[in-house]
Length: 244
Image (cartoon, rainbow, N blue to C red; front, side, top):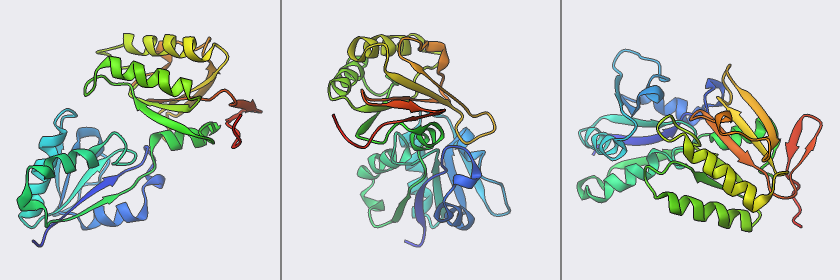
């Protein structure tokens, strides 16, 4: 096979945060595949084909990318943030399982700066000790599992990063999340709402759980919850590196 396939992370939004490795792959590509707004971040040029698609066809998108690469194309599947964090790398390998004819294909996964790490840097260092990341969307897993993971993470006193906190189709879900966290962690725990990180629309706001409201988050927001030791210093929020 002469084609290749790259799954690349475009970072959280700013072009300055796209890695040189990803930029080089984009420059060599014949085809760009991805969710509509992510493909729109790639500049058109002669000889480059853009293949935007809807957000809920990840495996179909990955299968199409494999087929193009197997036909000799140089294909880049784009994700925001890092492709291995709630993004297209996993979908690519899911599609690859049913395509043994593509197992010899050259495939590379190129990391990107995640939204949670960009958000943490903008706020200070709220993920400075042990932490976990939880996708709050129940599109691909049941709500009961989300609730169980929230409670267990709170019991372990982990800082937490939340993706996809509140959509128009399920605005009530994040209200439930906040109630669970207040019950498990108390009202004084610090929580940061980081919207449109690294873009001109960036907004960072840190409040206590008692002050947090569901409408403070949307699908462009990453939410960071500190652990019991997380504190403020001046305008910043940080979690000490020591435990206890």
